[in-house]
Length: 137
Image (spheres, helix red, strand yellow):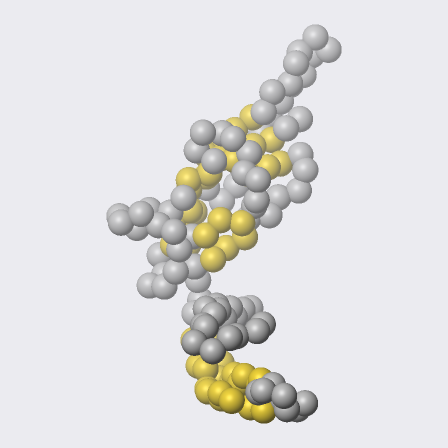
């Protein structure tokens, strides 16, 4: 990125760990200043991140879809409600991943364009987003 005098740029650092742990590392920024051909370190800081064990309340651990089709039947989507609640003290990002013929829908039973939902986007009462699991036979 290029920064002109007085210009600033906001960034977000993201981290990921498969296990609960504390991680400490250095973050530094190098820049070419003026017409100098070499990079100079201009900022260095230590970042500490505490990865916690996520805790989620799930409305259902298992879904069962049963479809009995006759030759004349037109199959429609079958829906099951799913509610997720973050019970951690910190915001939690999660990824819902399903393979065809299953899909994730919103409360209005509309397929979600992306399967990633941010559990940290809770309302003031601590309720997480609501979804529907759907089966398209």
